[in-house]
Image (cartoon, rainbow, N blue to C red; front, side, top):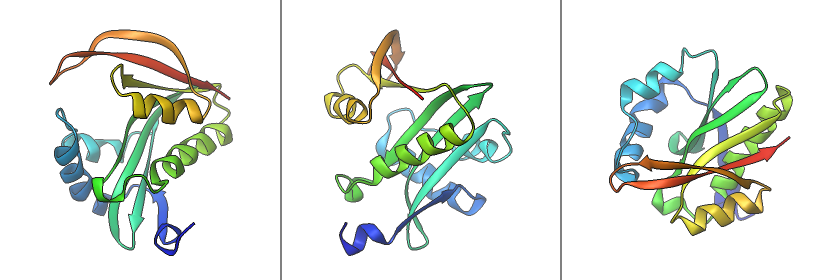
Amino acid sequence: MDDRLSQIQIRLMEQEDIQALADLEREVFSTPWSYDSLYEELSNPLAAFFVACDGAKPIGYIGMHYIIDEGYVTNIVVAPEYRRQGIARRLLRTALEFSEENALAFLSLEVRKSNDIAIDFYRSEDFEITGERKNFYTNPSESAYIMTRRL
């Protein structure tokens, strides 16, 4: 791990992170989460959102919801200039560790069917395609694979 990556810290999302994460959402996604949507997750007892920070600067996050023994990733994003450095993998593994600590049976997520890079990434972390959601995404409209890792 190079020095830059070793300085990246992952922690629970705080209110001070939300504006930077909302800005990142708008930069990266065609249908971004709003500031208010992210803010609401702070008080959601069934949510865990983890932020990757370079110093004090939020550079990515993973969000998940969980109920009983089921976990669902809502979003995972890393700022474009920080991609391909293992940060998304660290975020995903943080969510997996949280899932195991909370005795979840699985962690599941949706991914665009055309996103081969993401599909390969999730497969490398032992996620399997377990279903499909027709027309799940908009801007552009596209179906999603459901990918699941049993724990």
